[in-house]
Image (tube, rainbow, N blue to C red):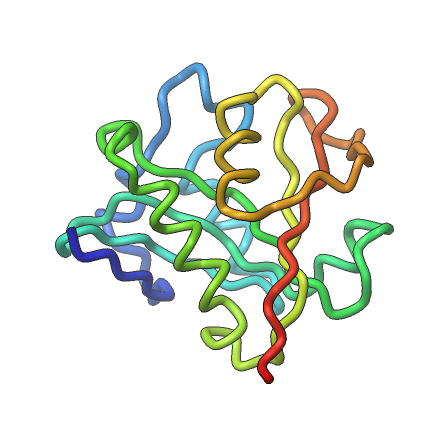
Length: 163
């Protein structure tokens, strides 16, 4: 399996709009086309597609304005938002592999110094919570209470500083 992550280009392609999650996951993620359209108006948010063997299998946003949105995030922290693997490709190890690639490379893609990467995950979404822990995210022991689907754990990945 060859995993590649690329920043999206406008106009939005059909392969991106066709990415989706199971109906039971929609409250946690949302609808891809709506996420992208909202994100495109935010200059400090970038949109990314995860490819496996040249097939679009997932999506996420990197938010460089995260500290202004999440009051407890330190200045300069980046937010991982709207991360998901398409329902057709779940269960193949792509989430763990792509998250490892994201945590290793996000600062290079954004052309910034290594920094902390934050995300929120719904308290009901135990599968995602455990996955994030496996790839190195730590629970900050604080909750974000502004989520439409209920309270969310705030998690942080501490980037390794270059020596």
